[in-house]
Picture 1 (cartoon, rainbow, N blue to C red):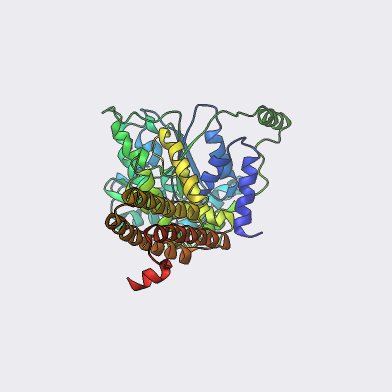
Picture 2 (picture 1 turned 30 degrees about the horizontal axis):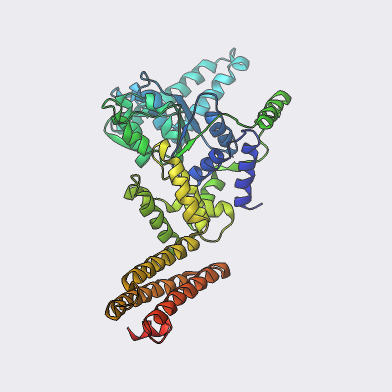
Length: 457
């Protein structure tokens, strides 16, 4: 089984235990494949955290940190606290000695002596041997402490700085003191403590909430930057289908709910990320993304940062779909990336469906619409045909516009990626020629194909 098939098997496995959550499960996979952050919006009890945790259980070796945030949550609970022993002159924290082979061997000798104490407690030199082992360990630790510069050490075991996957429930309940640290962690994968900056290995941050802040409220506007750092966004709802609800209930009653039958390793996930990043993004995909951007900006705000960061999501969808390059249909995955407020979701999905399902049809229709508008203007300018001078001027104007549209048609023909797309573009040429022929006949000029007129210009 190749890596893609393994990931698809994990997705199927998770979908088998979370009903009507296919969109969420796919976005969890895409987030992990692209190292993006994901926000899940939905009412309590809609399996938001459960789906994320279940997916993580399918990744062996992945360390997870999970926390329900509140106004009382502080940085130490998320990122770790300073080891006080590291601040005492002449002392050294245990974490600084973890990789020291000499210290490890001396500690092993002492442990062996302690473990064998029960059998050797009556021997004459037993406690003298314990003293020697203890003195050696203490002396070495003291020597290392004297040589080591005194600097604070943060205990990060079990905290975000050592987690591969982070789940923060009710993320917008965090206080102002935690906010800045979370912003840096989500955006840069770094954390600063006591003047030192530490890298964070986290692949993806997942966040969940049953509401989003009111950014018009000055007190909540501070959370806007945090919200924007969560690039992918999914909205959940209660299970709608009755049969599906009953099937889930039956699975829970039988004990089959949430079983893990397929797993991937953390190393395999990293290799999957490399394969996703290697998927080619053709110019046509970038141009389509720009068309989507321009269309959305007619009615909503979409930042340049959003547009410039679209392609990893399309690459991940292409990889999951088995495509050897990004195709127009892969940009449909942007429906959970381009919207910012829930009210924009339908608008984004509508534009994506219109432009991505058959983008060549949309482009052909656009050129054809411009040609028909030009034809209508020509007919209106000609009037009843009594003024030959007006008809001539209108004809020259129409001919120039048709030549321009013919050139667009040639560009579309060159970019056609299938026989069906080529047929669409060829049909457009036939329509342009028909409009040109009718105009020639109306004004009494000899018909000349658009290709010959264009060659003369």
